[in-house]
Amino acid sequence: MKKPLFEYFVLTCFVLFLIGLKGGYVQGNAAVAEEESNVIWEDDFNTSSINRAKWDFEYGYVRNFELQEYGDSPQNAFIRDGTLVIRATRDDQGKWASACLMTNNKFEVGNARIEARIKIPKKNGAFPAFWMLGAGYEIDYKKQVELGDSWLAAREIDIMESFGKGMNVQGGVFFQETSEATALSHYFATSQEIDITQFHIYAIEKSDHKMDFYCDGNLYYSYEIKDKGLRDPFYLLLNLAVGSAGGTPDPKTTEMEMVVDYVRVTTLDGGPATELSSISLEKAAIYGRAGDIKKIGLKLSPLKAQNKTVVWKSSDSRVASVYGGFVHMKKAGTCTITATTYNGLSVTCRVVCRSNKE
Image 1 (spheres, rainbow, N blue to C red):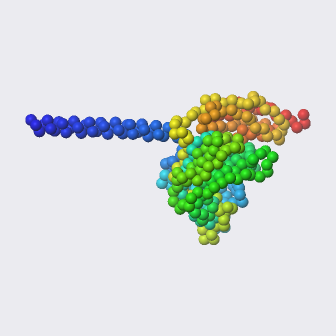
Image 2: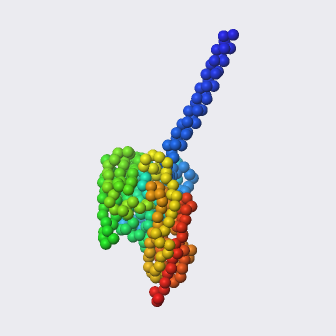
Image 3: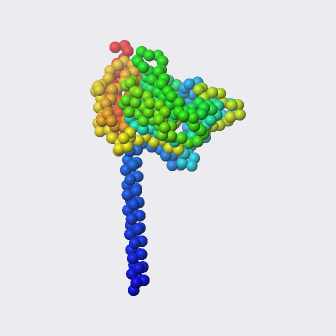
């Protein structure tokens, strides 16, 4: 009789152990879910191709007298083993091609922690970056002209930049101090020496008052925010440029790669993200003449909401087009501009464009 009782006891303990494991697993998942609830936006690149709902591309020769032409060729930007690969390539004629991915009109962020795990090439000519631009900045890539804010006024935040064969990375900010200024102010610092060809986590923590720059969790620069424009929404960019600040590529170099494991945006306090609950206009209508550029004043509430993505659309782009909230008036007539947030809130502004002859 003792043996069956003993076996029953062992079996009971085993069942309780399994229940405990299951309970622990559920609790563990709940803990993970709770921990992940602070994620505002992310891409871990565990897809077969680049997610075009999250990323767009730049095109052409865009800035800084760089050597590469940007495009969306799968030879220059693709998914490999759960990572994003941006590859700069040189053809037989010596022309470089590469890619710059951005979240413009897809994701714009206010105050948050923005980070990515990246490894970059240590080669002459390499000029990789993980950075942000003010949400009002857009380019007509066919004409290579700025459509919204100028680059001077839009403001730039560099989370990670590297130049050629450097042993560290740089983080910093560019912006126009005043509306009358014709040059950028540039504040930056460099990280500790690292092997840039290995994965590192580059991050900033951005609030209304300061930006802290990190490399692998080590704070290497803290910038006090005084310029109001640096509190506006920004979109993200990842690119591998060639030349310019990266120097001249070696004659034998025909390609180089930047590899991104993930990009993640989380709340500063570790709590759940705050959703936008209302959107309103500073003015119900704007007036101007053909050729004028007017900015629509938009109020998003609550201010502490982290995701500030807004998509703009004109009812008649022949009368007026809109880029990042900047309305380009083209010919006499009326139309409406609609601003829609990522979570479906919308508002419309009436645009009245008068003829230059009036």
